[in-house]
Amino acid sequence: MLITRSLPAHLHPCLLRLLLLAVAALSEIVPVARGDVGTASHYSPPYQPTECYGGDPSQFPSSNFFAAAGDGVWDNGASCGRQYLVRCISASESGTCVPGRTIQIKIVDYALSTTSAVAASTQSAPGATLVMSQTAFGAIANSSVASINVEFQQV
Ligand SMILES: *[C@@H]1O[C@H](CO)[C@@H](O)[C@H](O)[C@H]1NC(C)=O
Image (cartoon, rainbow, N blue to C red; front, side, top):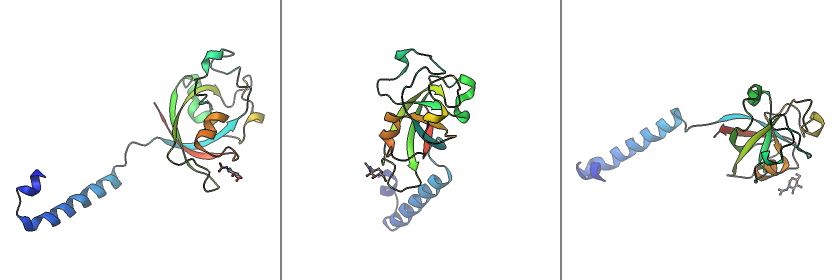
C-alpha cells in the first residue's frame, strides 16, 4: 500500500488498526442503503381481474413474482407496475426465510380491493404490506407460514 510504504515501519500496525476502527465505526453510523420494512402474506389463484390491469393476461411477469399492494404501498394506484426488490428478514418461526434470497416483484393489484381477484378471503394473513403470489412468497420463504417480515425497496 502506498500510505504504509511512505511511513516509518513502527507506525504501520497502529495506523492500520485505527483505519479499520474508523471504517467499522463509520459503517455503524451510516448504514448501507436500506429499503422499508413490512410484512408479506400470500394469496391464491385466480389472480385476475386485478385492480391495475383487469383481465389482461400479459400483466404478469414471466417469473410469476408479483403482488398486491397493501395500504402503505398502494399510493392510490400509482404503485401499479412498480417493481420492488423483496427479501425475507424474519418470521415467527426460525428457519422460515430462504437465506440470502432477494426477488423482484411487480405490483398488479390492491390488497384491499373489493372488485379484484385478491379478496381478503384468499389472503393468508390480514393487513400485510405486500400480498404476494404463491410463487413469489415460496421463493423467499417456506410457504407453510402465513406471514413474514420483509425488507423491500423500489427498483
Ligand atoms: C416448512 O415448514 C413446515 C412446517 O413447519 C415443515 O414441515 C417443512 O419441512 C418446511 N419446509 C421446508 C422446505 O423447510
